[in-house]
Image (cartoon, rainbow, N blue to C red; front, side):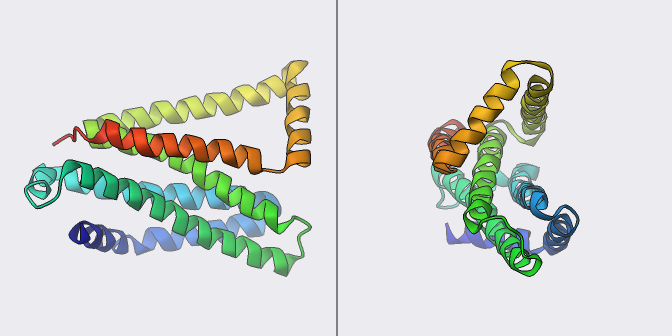
Length: 219
């Protein structure tokens, strides 16, 4: 298992330029969009670095590399667990860095936004990105990178459809604004904890069932 972590560390280390560009983009989002840039910066940074992490799986699956890895004292279950743990580690580390930048810039720019809101944004986005990429990871491990790209495109289309549909519902229906107002009022009264709790439960489901789904590895 230590060998797997070392191999992936060296692969991720070689992608330092992607990490640097990601941090620059996140800082740019904070400078240009201010408070609203927190969500944009965190989302771009976490998603970019997580996609870099998925490239380690593609590297393993090239030229029958996964078949060789499984000849070592490593089981398919251990390999899958390590990849899910690596995905979670990359998302967590990226979110912590970008959240720290947002907190520092908040103090510098004297934003009125509460610290708890910044942390809630970071936690929520991290969990959402884990949900999306956790499903993609489990699909790629089982079926290979080509079919995973198709699945991720479809998943991205569904997310875009949900967001676009929500915007249209708010603009063009009578129930859309009422639902949005209810959600905002609920957030004002109860804070972001109920939403975070739901996301945590969904993330746990993806963690356990995603690993089970991915164990028949594509070799």
